[in-house]
Image (tube, rainbow, N blue to C red; front, top):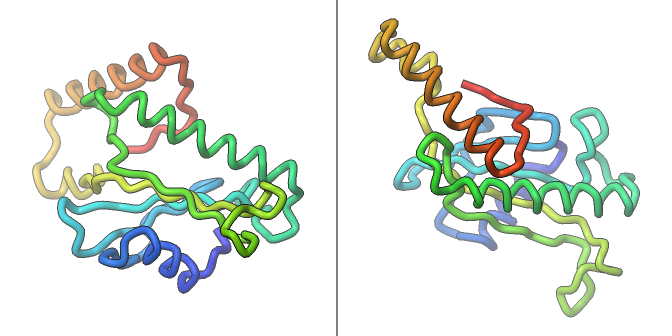
Length: 168
């Protein structure tokens, strides 16, 4: 994502001035994930920018139609995640926030097509590698994890969601 760290911290301050943007711990095609040090419980922030149609095409020249399409995509993702918030096998959203840049003097998006940055706050879980180092891995645990993943994917399917990005 090509959003500048300083700009991202300013947006985060408008959402919640008590939060500090930590190091980036993950990146995908349309989003980056950052630590939120000092948060309790420990949290992460997923950031999605409507200028980013893909990892290779993230700039201010993204067409209006593409920005609108990305905004709809991000809103749908947030709604889908909220639908799944009761599933104990899926990390729930703690909160989400849309910050609209390129606004007029009244704070409205210019021509309703301003650039949006979406932020999703979630609990930070232990990465699988760290879990294995700390607790070890047994056959019973591997089977339980596989069953939990299957339950999560089944819950997604029950809600009409096809998850194309499963990570440990």
